[in-house]
Image (cartoon, rainbow, N blue to C red):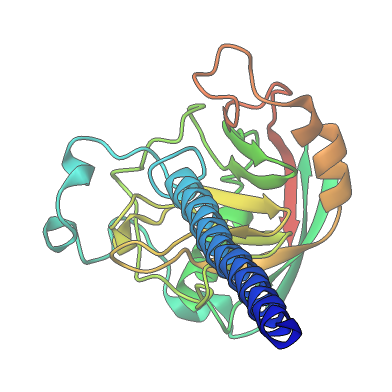
Length: 268
C-alpha cells in the first residue's frame, strides 16, 4: 500500500515538474519572439530615420535652398544635351592661369578674406577669375545669396545686379576639379552655375563655411578654384550670423540680412 502511495506521489511530482518546465519554456519562447520583434522594429525605425535624413539633405542641396547655382530661367531648364556646350563671350585661354597657385585677398564689407587659387587644378575657371580680378569686375559686386543651416552653408558673390541670375553673354566649361565625393570643405571657393549645364559657369562664385555635401547633377559637381586661408571665422561672425532677410521665403536661404558687397579684391 505504501509502495503505491509512493509511486503516486512520484508520478504527481513528475507531472508538476513537467508542468513547470513547460511553463518556463513557454515564457522563454515568448521572450525570444518579443526580442526578435523589438529588434526588427528598432532596425526598421533606424532605417526610416536614416532615409528621412538622407532625403532631407538631398532635397536641401538639389532642389532646395542648398543648391549653389543661379536659378535657371525657362530656357536654362532644358535638357543637358540641349544646353550650350561651348564657351560664350570673352572667355580667356586657360593659359592665363599659368598652371600655378595664385594668392589674393577680398574684402566683404569690412571683412577681409585671404585666399589661394589653384591654376593647375582648374585652369579655365581660375583664368576667368584672374581676368575678372585684374579687370576690376568684382569691385562693388554683391553677395545676394546666403544658404545657412546648422552652422554650415555658402555665400554666393559676384553679382552685378543683386540677383543670382545666369549671365547669358558669358559662360564657360566644362566642370573642373569637383570633389569626387561631393564634399565641399569649409573655406572652399567654387564657381556657381545653372543645374545640369556645365557651360553656364560665369562670374559668380560661392564661398563655403562649414563642410557641406552637394550631390552631383547630370554634369557633375561644381568647379573648385581655391580656398579661403584666413577669415572664415570672421565671415561667419560678421555676415552669416546675421541670418537671412526676414522677407525671404525660406529660413535657410535668401539674401543675407547683413547686406554684403565686395569692396576690394586683389590677386597676384
